[in-house]
Image 1 (cartoon, rainbow, N blue to C red):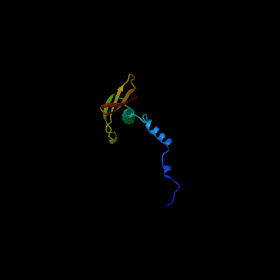
Image 2 (cartoon, rainbow, N blue to C red):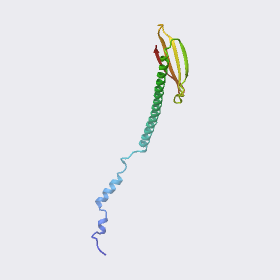
Image 3 (tube, rainbow, N blue to C red):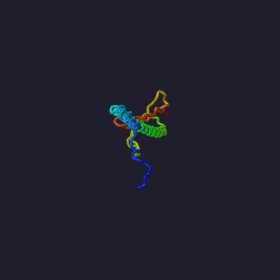
Length: 145
């Protein structure tokens, strides 16, 4: 059997090193980790922030949907106004109805033509109405012809 040059005494812990190992394990009373209370507080704060962020996301999605409905209603009101004013209204009247296109199924329109103090001028009002959840929403355009 060949001798590799290592002896058993080489694997023994020297007494000075043994003291260092004892000190590092014995002085472990104040570890740099977090306590259970600190972890619970951090998880609670993160949970509250998550709930707030989800609420903001839902609110912003509702705001985007409302803005889209207002934009569509304004476009429909302008289209209806062009149709009414092109006929050069001269008599007071009121009319209402729904848009025939399937894309605008939830929208209704209402036109009102009324006299003004000036005999040659008529007030033309076009309102587009729709339901936004439980609320009734309206976009109204007014022109004088």
